[in-house]
Length: 140
Image (cartoon, rainbow, N blue to C red; front, side):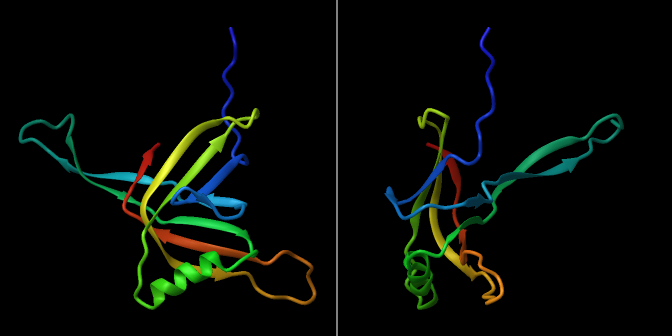
């Protein structure tokens, strides 16, 4: 019987409205959480009811080496009041470079842009990080 191994987290692509804009070294925040309320029923002490109330989505964070001004310009538009929402696609690939999972992050827009510290004593790559608010994650 063939063994099914988990997929590795370093083979992925990120697209903005189906357009690839450079490579990303890290994607964080693929999170959705359903909140609930607990309710006890009178006279029943051995359990409580769990009632789903709302599903929330954490912000998506993309990190990459600073290469162009695409993410900066998008956030600059938001700062100026021109919010352009985009569908972000995160596609996971297997060892044969075949797509195995695809997450669609709906109606996303940048809410925070961060650059790394600049230090003349260290020869590291300058990294930009962009945090995006969105309205949901679904499997594509």
